[in-house]
Image (cartoon, rainbow, N blue to C red; front, side, top):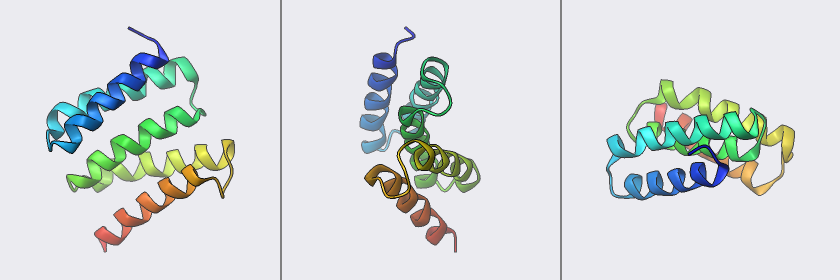
Length: 105
């Protein structure tokens, strides 16, 4: 039950529900995937940042900006530290965060 592949599968299943608009079903899967990833991989792993980005996107689409913002900020910090400022994944998450900021204004 606690393996990085399980967290990855949970993320994938949550993404399916997200794409179907079943946000209430996706959320606990994203939350659990993030918790498993943090526990097994540590706080500074790119997979943790990916889980944070996914959960933040779910919150953003629901207008839960206060819940999404710290997840985006933390994911960006992790990715900048581990992968660098110009890595494609860092840029993607930074862009996702900017989209949310634009929606808020």
